[in-house]
Length: 112
Image (cartoon, rainbow, N blue to C red; front, side, top):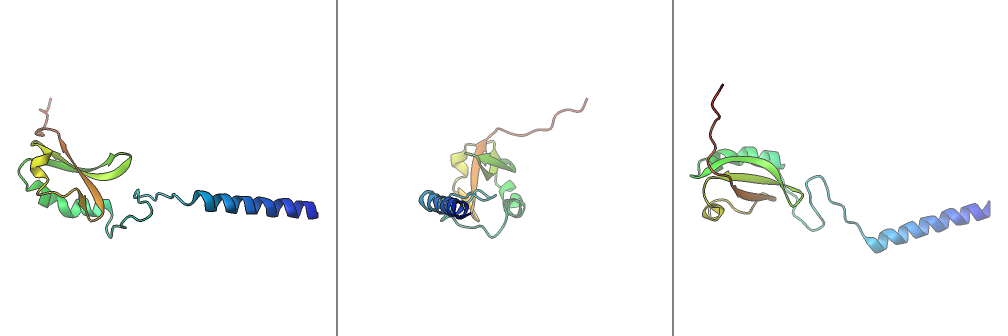
């Protein structure tokens, strides 16, 4: 019985030590890591709040939520060069990364 208790205690100590050495590298659902700013609004709320403003900028064709380097971001689709929009659209909005992607003009397909 004492041997079982000793083995259990030894396992607990080893696991605790391993956790202390490796540290915590939790990345939450929003892709945040330790030390990063926690946004007040979700990415969906920010997109909804800002889409009309961005769509009013000449050259902006659309907005969406996408992935960049495996993390969620706001995508701005444009028919002009992304550099031309950088002074109007920052790379980070309310804690969420913004990626400007040149796609060309959007147009509806003809109905058949």
